[in-house]
Image (cartoon, rainbow, N blue to C red; front, side):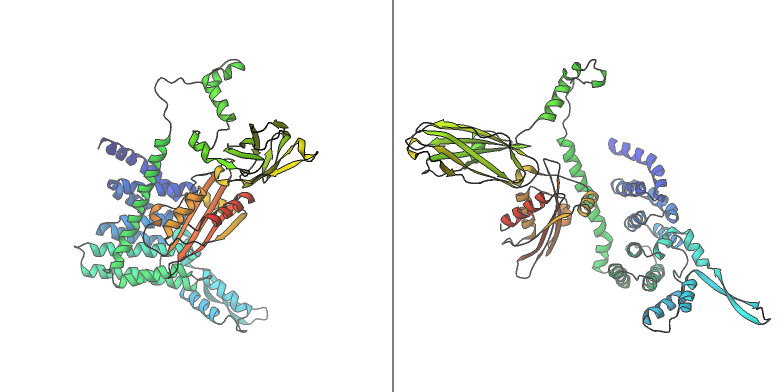
Length: 566
């Protein structure tokens, strides 16, 4: 309770100051309105104060995104009859007088659209049509040079156009922001539904507000039909749906429109809070009495690395830790690969240890024949962005003797690579002929260098548009459940799902999710899964992979193709 009172007091102080920034056009205005939306949900006692402030600033907000979020706040948090009236009045003032588009312009535009292929639409008619949208024509009498009288038409400024220039909300609607028009229709419909929930409102008041809102929705559709380009299908469908809800405000779909959007936002706030708590728990806290080192205060160049902090920084910068966290005996056995057969003259196996920037091969060679092997050499070669760091050496193995050889291979990028080669040696009974044993290939998995990571949705979209390498993999799996397939891909690609869990809940035959991972070389890997469940239960769709380098896109695509069967 003490913490809640403290937060409430701080919010009371900063909200009036922050609210003044919503009238700006930069990114700060969007951040402020998003913060206000979250504060109202967490602190319901501030609802009335915030609504009053936003209503007073509504006519001066010029950012379309800020207006959309503000309309959502009005539709969700307007609770009383008086608040409904005030909100409706503020919206009508922000939009301005009707009609939004003069009837002359709408008529001329519809005629021009219907007779677009006719030959009788000459240039003078087009000029008259364009000027009628912004001006009112007035007549007058003029005298020609020959003394005759003619009637002239002059363009006088239109009152509607002047008012539209002064109202940012109206300007956005007239310039073709039909998404904002759909959000406005949604907000107005919620206000009416909230009014129908209140028991003390007379029926004639409900009908009056219903007629006003219906007229506004009809005007939005008329404006969309008369605009060039015309309104998009999604926005038109949303406004028409709001009209259907107005015809029956007590239907079940009305309650879903009124309550489900706020419930989805509450789930989003809870999910964000849980992620923040998890990140805070992962942070390392410095214990009490720990020495704090200020490198700027040290004297002498050699003194900089004498303290513990400097040594730790150098060790961290030059470290090349193994990506396999477990180094026990059982983990080592799981990384052993057999390179030759048991019946070959030389038995060879390798323990593969993948570090952050290189690969260490610990080779075990056993002489299985009864003669001494001379000039035994392990000749290795690589394919991909792998490079051998040292030249092979010659060894001599007595019968049944074994030897351990270590080979270091440098990795320069995240890409699936292959290590292959052979073992050559001399025998006294081979009459100066070199003997050769072919080794099995060692495939370096790209998953050893990729780890799950998180990035904001805006950054994901920016990288998705920027990266040029794309690999499109068709879904071909025996898995029947959408979420099960998503979990299977995440497990086999070491990628993290950026789509919120609340968006993936529910029973649906469609699923779309974004995945993200980062390599040890700071390379980004993006993926989008779009799948659909057919009537026969089979999954169809595509997995699209994008990256800045070709190697990651191709390697992840091959990995998904190989593992997606389930």
